[in-house]
Image (cartoon, rainbow, N blue to C red):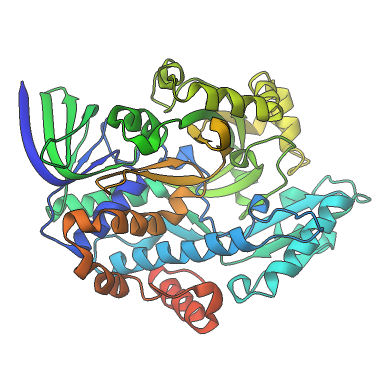
Length: 493
């Protein structure tokens, strides 16, 4: 049976991106007809699921890959500052929705968890000290601590120091007001609030099969479900389907997406099963990524709060699969290759042979080797205390650039049609943490098509007190916003 409906906006995929964008659209104009189509039985089960991501509130406190070394030996802080202040936007939106009762108690989705960078060896210790000196003098990183004293670091992260060679140089930085975020719980809470208020329709078990332009403007979005086939005629479409976003962009056929390819990277956690070990660690401890590893493979020993229980995870160990989603098909990668993106895909692979070699090694790695790698951060780790858990699936972006060669982009990127009627988010970290910033960009893209230009700026200033202000250049506003959101979200400032 074929049914047809109209909507102002159709969002494909019920993850944190679509949840944030849907809630933001409703705040701007409560009369908008918003439809969300999700292939799985519930929202937030794929990339946003707590077991499928690190749960780190990415603010560049501990993620060393956000502060690369430059040719002159200095440390670049520009990306770290951008991510740090973009996380503030997310905190402000969450705080607003907690006050409006759209979200439940914040402790259901966000809690404090110290963020620690830990390195060993003279070279990495020297880098960490430079990083600390560059970041700590900026007000956005106020409160960051540094130590190369083993006894101090032991008090911060005892598991990371016990059994370590006392002669080996070691150093760490710590930010006590780091956070752990359960993006799955946050996603489902947002959709529960939106659907209960009839602010959006969430249709689960609806798999999008076609995306076509309407002759009169907008898009026809066709989805199959157990009840039949339905087509929505929409003014605007957002694709927030994680790894499946590339395939859906290809169905839409917009010129702006031509040549884009994807490089799927899978992951595995080691999950601690010993309550005594879990109880002794309360921090997110990030180390240095192995040479050639993608950013999502930066080793970290993470305290997590999942379904009200404390967990301890290490990883993720990278791997390669041809699936674009954890619940996807082994044919996903091959079906994504076209005449227009084959050369970008091949050239990017040739330019990243060290990454390919690294991934092959990770796939072939034994359980014993995985525990040995864990011991770089937790020297006394016992194999019997840890079990494997499959992490989420990510598709890194390969963008066509000079002379059609593909360039691997290890981040989050928006691809949009020229008329602003269709947009998609590709890539991975720090995506979920900066979902508010991405949702604002998406709003700016489609505001004209939805007639929201006059309403948008005033509404955003109400929702986000710092909107229009660069917190990296405004110490007073930054401090005020962080104090306010910490109070509402029940966090330390």
